[in-house]
Length: 208
Ligand code: TMP
Image (cartoon, rainbow, N blue to C red; front, side, top):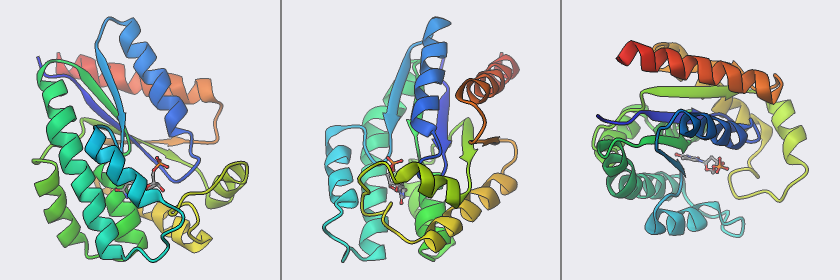
């Protein structure tokens, strides 16, 4: 039986990484095999592309280059890691997937959405997540949480950019309410985790 494909999205500092781990722990405790991964990243080639993408010393990167590198990273990730894992019955949880491109490169960088969708279909071999959790926080909250760490190339963007990213995610979630579960990222960690586990269980029961 094919595994579940679950993705997490949100602006910087929204708490995805913590929740990804908690969901993986829960799924494993129920006896399922889980592959935990992230975008940009995953296999060796995609992690190398990640380094190029997030390098804070290359602010000259053009939006076109950025979009194509995210797509290149994604096609290797999906073809080499995600699809084989799902087909072997493992669940896959990814910290970001193609919705991030729609929000960051589409809504915030203003690249044509139809073009992004065509490239996405190509780079993902038409694979779609079963469930996507969007952890929503305000840009002010994100800035407050980020001041504690070193910023990468994208995190260094201005407030206005992150506001567009947030709105991009919320618009996407509205357009696909079946797949997206929007959660308040400022709620306590355990409250968010329980909500995520409940939604995942509900989806699993429906699939039986
Ligand atoms: P992370 O900090 O959540 O690991 O994500 C890396 C950065 O890359 C983050 O700033 C969001 C950005 N990003 C895009 O701009 N487009 C994409 O398609 C993906 C996956 C990430």
